Amino acid sequence: MSNSNHTGQNSVPPRRKVSDRTIAISCLAFFFGMVGMAFAAVPLYAMFCQVTGYGGTTQRVEQMSDTILDKKIVVRFDANTSGGLPWHFEPVQRDVTMNIGETKLIKYEARNISDQPTAGRASFNVTPQAAGAYFNKVECFCFTDTVLKPGEDLEMPVVFFVDPDIVNAPELKGVNTITLSYTFFPIEMPAPVAASAEEKKKVSGQL
Image (cartoon, rainbow, N blue to C red; front, side, top):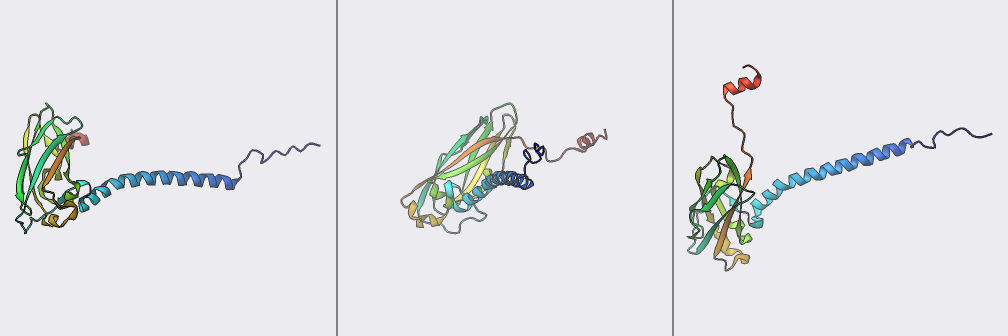
């Protein structure tokens, strides 16, 4: 007499189903966690560079130096555009000789050479990179995004000083020249800050 009971031959034990589901959920959680960490790493890395000057990142300060040394340093200025941004961008002066600790105002110029309004964001660094920790900006166009109308020219100031502590940095001993470099990248045009009352009514369907 043959045994006709085939129950359980092709079925998956309940415990194994739960285990497979747990593994799948864990893998998904790990994946999204890694993605989240990758996005979080960008501002954290930027913050790290801002604090330490790593990679030639300059420092942002609110007060000018109260110490000026009787020692000169040359600061050169470089300008670039990237990503097809249709701007002519350059420093008004190519270099300046100044005392360490002295606060200086220089300017860059940008012109939109296209027939459309465009927006840009500036990245910046100094070389040698170790000097980034001692290059302090009080005011800079790089703190905000820039929008230029077709054909518009704009003068953009930078107020800065070189921290007197730079003379105590052994890795910068003998350095008499620093180069400040900016690169403008295109960004999407910002949305209008506020719509008019008539536009708001149109959106809400009142007109």
